[in-house]
Each structure stands twice: as C-alpha cells, then as structure tokens.
Image (cartoon, rainbow, N blue to C red; front, side, top):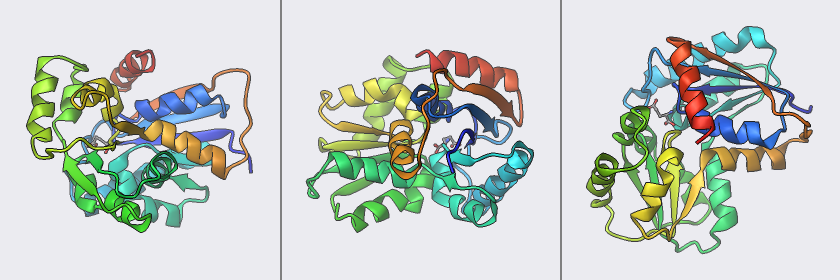
Length: 251
Ligand code: DGL
C-alpha cells in the first residue's frame, strides 16, 4: 500500500513541527491535521487520561478514510500508541521509535551521552531510555522540560526568558551531551537556543525528520510534484491553530 492520504494527530498545535517535515517531503497527496486544542497539554496528565484522549482522537479520524496516521505527539506516542494501533483499521506510527532509530543511524558510539528532553509524562514513561538501552546506549538522561511548551506556545523562540528557563533545567545535567533528543513537538522551534547552550556541539534529533526517515524506509512512497493539500481541524479554536501553522510552517 502506498500511503497518499495521511492523518497527523497531536495534542494541540505542536505537531505542526512534525507536519512541516511531512509537507516538505512531498510524499503525500493529502494531509488531515487534528489538534486536540481544547485539552492540550497532555504532558501533565495521567497515563489513563492520555490513552483515553488518544482513542477519542481515532473517533475523529473515522470518516476520513486514511491510509496511515502519524502521531506527532511524543506524549501520545509514549502512552496511547499501542491502544490506538490495536483498534485502528490502518497503520499508526508514533515518533519515539523513529527518533531512536535516527539516533542509532547517526551516533554509532554506544558510550555517547544522550540527553532526552520531553514533557513530564514522556520522561516518566522512560520509553526513550528503554528503547535506547535495547540498542546498547547506557549513558542516557531524561529531563522533563515542561515550561518550554507554554513558552513556545507564547511565540517566544529566543531571548532572555527562554535562556533563563534553559539554564534552570540544564543545571540538572552538568555535561555536554553528544546528542539531544527533542522529545516533544514544541522543542524543534527552540532548537537553536538549546544547541547554543552547549556551543552547538550536540547532534539534535528532531521528531519530524526522524519520522520521515522512518516512513521512507518502511513504506513505498511516491513523490508528488506539488505539496500536499493540508486541512486543519481542532477540538477548539481552529482559527488559532491555522494562525500558528502559518507562523511555524514559514519559520
Ligand atoms: N505534543 C506534546 C508532546 O510532543 C507537547 C504538548 C503537550 O503536553 O500536550 O509531547
């Protein structure tokens, strides 16, 4: 099956950072984006609630006849993915396994220091570190950097407030990592500030790039002449989501 029509699910607007990579690949004809903006953030919620919200998102996609669904949200990928895969009639791909594979392809040294950034829920799940341990990486450290989410939502991508927040969190990890996993949809938007904190030395793993690499390796994809038609849906204020999309997709 060659996937032409795909869905992208995120807890809110953050998944637009992943959508950007999917659009630029020109591997899809149609993309339906759904953000659960009425209930974002998921990253502070319990596992049960995240699973329930993830299954409810499938209800939303029911009428779209998708070929494939991309779960752009790291938090949903950590908790809801399995439950979704069990009931959906089409394949569903999350961002965590692709992120780990992307790192494995780029960082062969298993002694490398890997810093994993994510929401509280993603870090508590330990899924990144478990999958990395399976691949032999033993020097991993998970850091919940929840405040990055509202800062990015506020349209702050650099400057004093962000730098102070980065400093606050990174004080807990007094090393220079070889790689940083940007394990949250919002973090690619502040990648420059994160990287500058370590003199631009670490390799950054971006969920959007990782999932495109994964899809290109796992499926036969067509390359279209035009960018896909993208339709946005949200559980609240779709206009706000569209505004954010305009800003982030051109950033
Ligand atoms: N989309 C979420 C993630 O990638 C971040 C926002 C939230 O907490 O819902 O983990």
